[in-house]
Amino acid sequence: MAARLPVLASAAAAAIALLPASAAHALPPGNDSPAAPAPFSPYTAVNGTPFEQQGIAELAEATPDPRLVRCLGEESFERTAWFSVPASTVATEVTVDASGRTLDPIDLAAFVQPELLAEPPPPPAAPPAAAAQAAVNATVPNACSGLGDGGASSAQEPGNAVSVRVPPNHPVLIQVGRRGVAGLPDDERAVLSLRVGAIATFFPVLGDRAEPLTPVARAKRSTAIRLTDATITAEDPATPPCPSLGTVWRRLIPGNDVPRRISVAGRGAATLAVFTGSSPAQGRALDCVNRDDAGPLEMIVPARKGRTLWIRVGADALTAAPARLQVDEAAGATVVDAGPGGSDPTPGGPGGGLPAACDRPQAERARIAGPRLSGPPVRYNVARVPIVVSLRGARVCEAELRLYGPRGLLYAKTVLPQLKEGKRAVRLGRRRTFARGRYRLELYGLDQRGERVKVRGSVRGRLR
Image 1 (cartoon, rainbow, N blue to C red):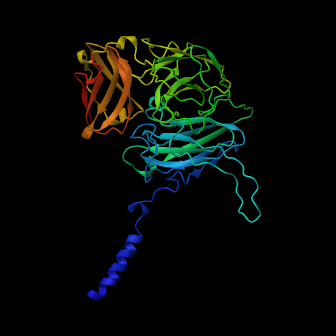
Image 2: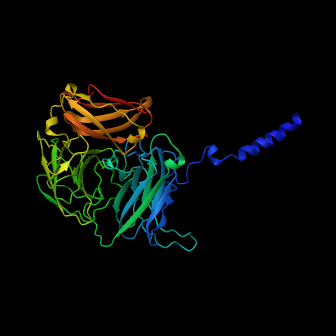
């Protein structure tokens, strides 16, 4: 009997070797790290002419990136892969689309790299070197797109895109990620499409970079800002709620602690953001606003004597009309809805994103109800989940609606500047695939003290 043990062990080893690869734990993809990004491959169009390039991200076994800013929230970029866009000798507009076969969100981020500078020819005995490059920028993203950016979360179809306009000789790293618990490999796979458009006539803009030489904005004086050919470079931190293809910077050094009203006029200005500190680093944004109408974009920001404020004006059009920047002291002043030309996607910020009717919120007086949730789960597996609600008693300011389901998990969520009284359909960004079970919709808002409270009542139901 003992003599048969080696034979049995050999047979067992042979059986294990014949198991399919999926039975064992797969290794992360080769481009799991920003140090080893994958290139995009040419993709031939129907007419046989290569127009776009494609990349396939296998994210089922991918891992998160430590010490990296998750620009779309702590739940984003849980499993990531990396791709590279080579530098071009001319300025370019880089756009990457991502899609998958499910509606689960895909996260995208672009990291603009430092400029590549050609080295002098090496001596004959030295190995050839193509270029000298500063440290790789793979920590703080310069543009983000996905659930929570105010754009992709509102899409009717799965997929989203990230776009940046970069100066000549700047490579770009693209990070693609998934959220939550990993599913089947086919469901986790993301297909990326790269488009690079050359900008033939390019002249660098004054203040295109946030650096010690960035022009200073003068107080109580209107300043013209040229926006044509604005680009994004490595020092420009991403602000997902207020994206722009290119940005122009001005510095403001306050002489006192009086808050400042910052106003930018001109349709060419697509966004306005203000940062504080020695540099406009990630997490130092005081507020940002988006273009909605023809009037000026405005915000009021706190100021500290001698502490630099970095003013960033964003532009989307390549030949955007010039903007005019105005900075004034604003002791006791208010700005509602980011000024007559804008909207504030970050309610509660200094930019005054809440409507005037929310100066005295009263969520504690409100009550929510609505028709029972019912039907098959597949009906709710859409990008924006529609739910009918009825609100009475008071409007709810900074309204946050959360839809919980089986095992108490969050299945959908949205945040609105306000939810008015009456009956209406609201649409929530889906967070996970719906399944059979009990669900409840909860509403949160601001009370008279400005604290977030839960509104009485809920919308409940069971999906079968």
